[in-house]
Image 1: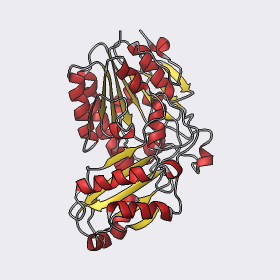
Image 2: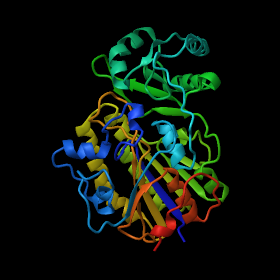
Image 3: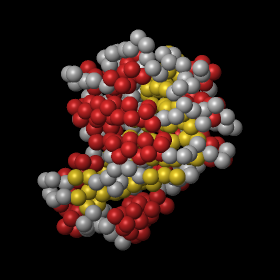
Length: 390
């Protein structure tokens, strides 16, 4: 009997364009494969041994004849390519009405309500790259105290503020105010606090980011596991993405490596149910910034930690490595890319070297985990546990 699932979401590590990706402006995208093709000497030996290079679309990574894990790629059923929709589908929810986006910035009724709520006027109000916008407007923000409000191609209301100008607690209160305003007609998937430090010419975003999401519209895998009396441990921004719903314990993290450290700590502790971790640096630091070299190095750095993760596991643990969307750093623009995501499953109770092909939905992972844990489940997806069980 499997007692615990460990889910590690390699944020934005997609493995190839979905059939409808052109409708999202994404043609020929493939985050992992394009990184491998464009970075000489790229080496992720532990993920390769687990089977990531055997997944369709990852030929540049290199396959493994006798992979340790079972592997597949998963298609996204939901409409969109953002963090919230991706995570919801991974836990059993299909979303067919995409969230609002604001390519022209937020309308006056939203801006005016926000300014009244926080007692400050804003600057910016347009789609922008987070690092570019603080370079452009950071000095004005410091001089005026006006928060930088911006969006992107995703459904987000982002607030950037220097930690010395607007203290973190005030920034978080601003986000809570925005979350209350951005509902109904003007609902957005996430309100995001984007604090930064430094001086003009050398600003740097900090790890004190917070995401304020809408709650899932129905129960997710996390709710079903919690209802069964088991632990649901959220590492990184997972608790924010689900607005705390279905979670019994959580911890925010400062970096990918901190996320790995906290995950290993929880694996070694006494708990039963699910540990779900999001490693956001791949997406936030490298994908959006179109830094293919940095992305490659971050993947290699994570790969080096995988033996520690596997060594910490017990015989009744199963680990899943996957992603929530793509963010091809070799592609134009700065936005997510609509892609298949990888799935690697490993544990003492899992058959090695099983190719599960292409799964029809991210939600297949949720159905499988519920099946493994013996938890009653009412979400979407089709369990593949019987095909990989020893």
